[in-house]
Structure formats: C-alpha cells, structure tokens
Image (cartoon, rainbow, N blue to C red; front, side):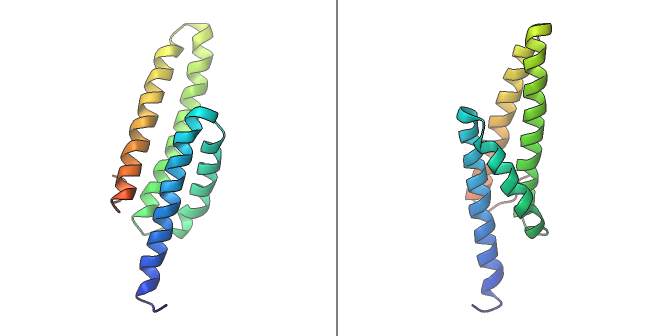
Length: 114
C-alpha cells in the first residue's frame, strides 16, 4: 500500500466503525446492552480519528450515549415522583432517534456529523 492509499483506507475503517456503532445504538433500543458496546468502540476510535470527519461521528456517539442515559434515568425517576418522566422519556427517545438517524445517514454519505 502506498502512502496515498493509507488515508483512504483509514477513513474507510473509521466509516465502518461509525456505521457499526450507530447500528449498535439502534439495537440498544431493544436490548440496552449493545449501545454500551457502541460507546466503548467510539471512545477507542475517537483519538485515532482525530482531525478527520469521523471524529465528529465518534464525538456524537459519545454525546448521545451519555445524554440519553442521563435523560432516561432522570425520566425514569420522575415517572414515579411527578409523572413528568413520561414526557422526558419521550423527548429523550425522539432526540436519540434523530441524532442516530442523522449520524448514520451522514456516515453512509461520507460526511461529517454536523
């Protein structure tokens, strides 16, 4: 492999990892566990992808995981306390879907997450 092929190959690998992470997040809606695997991969790949368009995807994946986790926990607690939790859970769910759908579309099209 020549030096000119290395960045393209690395970008292709990052793209694959980003798409796999988004898929794991979608599966996480059904089982909860695969999103944890996805965020671990995102943390591992983020530093390798620094300076590429794929860094934005790994940053998005990490942000989505922690925001959704905190929002879901807050919503679950508030369901029992005030009933407001159902609204919070619905907003977190829609936001989670939006960020992941937007991200996987951008990854498939070889664009940064913006």
